[in-house]
Image 1 (cartoon, rainbow, N blue to C red):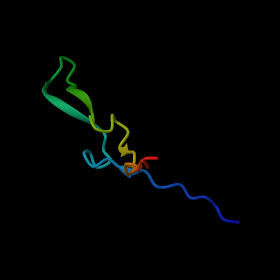
Image 2: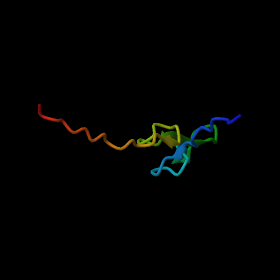
Image 3: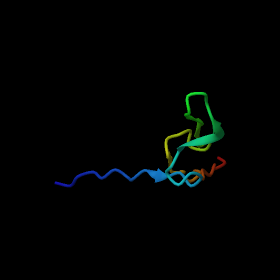
Length: 64
């Protein structure tokens, strides 16, 4: 019996699979913690993968 194999997810070329990062803003708060923000990849919206592009269908219309 043949098993169906799902295609592996494509890694986002913009973030190389690291979709979410923490960026320090410099300095520390009054409690001594680093001030950071979380940034998501704008291309994959934080998933780390991109969908495969399907080739455009080339339909030819036949005139009757």
